[in-house]
Image (cartoon, rainbow, N blue to C red):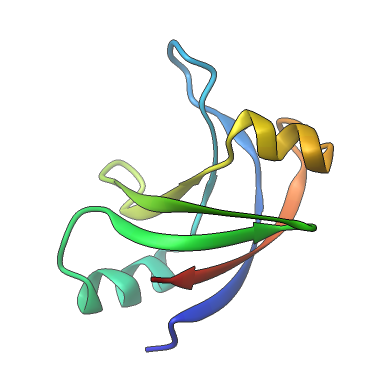
Amino acid sequence: MKKEFKIKAKVWLYPGLGGWHFVTLDKALSEEIRSKYKTGFVKVEAKLGKTTWNTSLFPHKQSKSYLLCIKKSIRKAEGVMVGDEVAVSIKII
């Protein structure tokens, strides 16, 4: 399994308190990650546009995929809003 990959996904807003924004990794990639890294959360370095940050992929039982949270500071720096399709580079650390 590669430790670095790129995804394109739509930014969506979690339907609860806090205003969490996520992108969802596709199921095939999520399965590949899950088979290699048996733990729930997977530490990664993510890059969107010119902004790089350290975070974790969140396991999401409903979609059977991993979620990547896009923090407010990242969205603001890159001009990203809900519904935008973004390209993100992800490196497992």
